[in-house]
Image (spheres, rainbow, N blue to C red):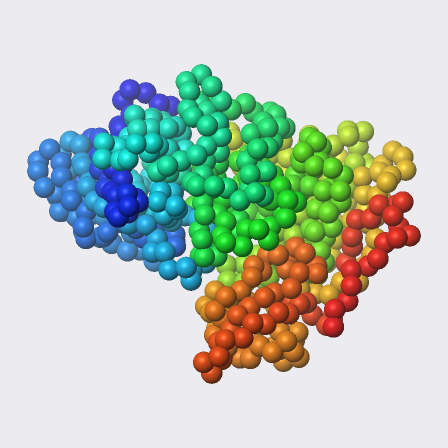
Length: 562
């Protein structure tokens, strides 16, 4: 419980400006009240699992009431941290001063998780994971963030997840509040347009630099209304003490496509291929993003929580349609997209324990785990509706109670999920879970949600080619064709082992859109070639698609490409 006796951590952030008044980095003054650290013990730590460390290990100036304080760094590979140890016992408040620089903008990197510190159109945005070392442990602090904009151009705004500066903004809790949150400074645009005490801006905001692409303008305009629907679903209300802020990051030529969720906030990162994202793609990601607030794990978690991936993907179908943000066609498209992801994965039959071992390094495994989790949750939902008088039993008995357990700090995993649903479903639930673990394909109810009368849609079995990029998918990250498959469509299109990959389109587009083709530019023997191919196997999977009954006669199965 917080009280006046809680020690204070104060963070003063001073943007440093370069040419043309673009922000080049930050000067940071971090003060830890009454630190009381013994000689040789850890003062602060920082995780090294982010894209890279932005904290200069040997350039931190430390002092306390007794004067200058020497620090030594210690790197732990066991828990992936950098620690700073004090050369003597501390006296009173400890102050750390240092500078940090953002990610180098090379245009050749891939940003899969936006946990770094980035420049964007002369501004700066990033998470505290990138540049704030904090005391270890779960002690409760009064965390205070303040900005110094005295040297900033007129119109500069400064934001933290928990409020807009430059005046001090406080939040009581563990020091992880400072690291697992988002910071933004520069010529910021927002919705609502400007902060005002007692208004929506106290508890919500959507922030970006420059001009948003047209398809993201659409998302910006519905984001707040959609957020309110999700908070109502989870029976929570937002407030100044419980805000939510969504940040948008333009990574330019550095490839990115998707979001990273933090404590009460989110960064959606997009690149110069954003125009290829269709409205339904972005709406589904918006729903996934906001649902994460109530059922997702911490950004610092190392393992993928598969159950919550399933819940978030399930809600990405329900919420936009149920609340009138998109029509039934969106529902149909999203259901079919997730079926495509699941049934055409080359790893659909892999047992869960083997799949989990591959997840950290294998894109197919990550996609299959998320899709399999969705099939488990939605399959359970479809069956539960046939076994209960409740209209939406999985939501009433599973999703919302699990979210409340999470919020209360209680156990909230698969064991609790099974315990809440077993009284209704009994052995049926156990069988489905056993199938999930064994890698036996889930069989969804063909007539879907139509329990008490004739329905308008059903699931139709279709043959669809397995996903197959024809090479090790790390090739796209490393920039060279590796482990090219003989006889694959990639090879047939002209790709060769060892080709230098200069550019490629997004893989996710091909994962979610059956007809999408992969486009690459390669260099071979000094010549640049552009190659396009269909990243699908010659082998077909027994897949399913959601079909409208009155369109059945006109239904044309997805084309087979040669």
